[in-house]
Structure formats: C-alpha cells, structure tokens
Length: 113
Length: 114
Image (cartoon, rainbow over all chains, first blue to last red; front, side, top):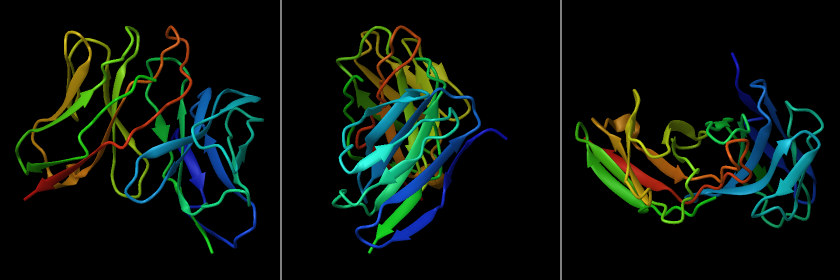
C-alpha cells in the first residue's frame, strides 16, 4: 500500500542533542512538508520541499534543518539550537500539482528532557 | 496561501448536521479550498476540496459561495467519531503546476454530543 511513514512514533532525547526524524513516502510525490504541533494548537510549517535537492524555510525554521537527497525521503533534524523542541511533528506530501490532496504521516512525538 | 478564518470551536448533537464555516476572502481565482480533519494525536486526513462548484463525497459536502469568499463543510449526520479538529485551507496554486507553502491555521474543534 502506498503511504507516508514517520518513525519512530515516540522519541526521547536529552537536552542539547541533535535528533533526526524520519519521513518516507512511496506515493511518488514531488512535494514534502514538515509541521510542528503544540498542545491545543494548529499546525505550523517548518520546512517544505517541492522537488529533490531543493527546500524552503517555512514559518518556524529556526533550530531545524532538512535535506531532500531522494524523492522518497525528507528527514528533519531538530538541532540543539531549537529552544523548545518538545512537540508533535507531522510530515506530509503532495503530488505537487495544484489540485491534489496532502497525505500525512501519523506523526512523531518528540520529548526532550 | 490565502488566509482562512474559522471559528475556534463548535458543538453538534449526534445525528444532526454539522455545518462548519470558513472565510477565505483573499482567495485567488485558481486556488482550491481544501478541508482536512485531525483526530487527536493523529495526522490530518483529507475530507474534500473544491474550486467553485459544490462538491459531495462519502464523507461530506462542500458548499462554496458564488464569490468564493467563504465555504461551509457539511457533515450530514454527525457521529461521535466526527469529533475532531477541522482545518480549511486554500493553498497557493501556481497555475495548476505546483503550490509551495501548505499553511494550516488553528482550525475548528468540533465536538459531537450524544
């Protein structure tokens, strides 16, 4: 079955450590997105990529980094520079055409202690 | 992306229709309106989208005003499982070839009561 997979579902890290969240899709989608969600809040865009080897900052990119070396993969690194990294992180993908829906992963809940 | 505005919360009785409004007064002529919903601690799920005609699928109906400045998502017979956050978005459509940001707002928390 085609879909978008995030792993792991829960992640714990010590403060000051970088951590990388995985996002893989087998939908042959061009565009991929990373969001952060805090309790009781909506989704805030961190980074997005419309095509391989290219990505743009979203609304809250500080303290995060991404890469897009393969069409299927869009990993997000939460660096030690991110002041409040504990959150629910969601990855999404779209075909990249203007009239298509977005598919979301099930999210990774990151807790930094 | 066009800015969208939704009420923060709504209630609905089980079995009744839930009508969720969304304002998108700055929407451009080629920007679609999409609706998603998010059940607690899961990824959002696509519901429906439309450009200017009303749309219906197995999950919901979408009514878009003639001037396209607002729309309403209708869940015809709400169930307890429809309790979720509902997001209305209008992503920038670069001539049907791609869109860049996919921006979500706060959404509407719909609570369906027994």
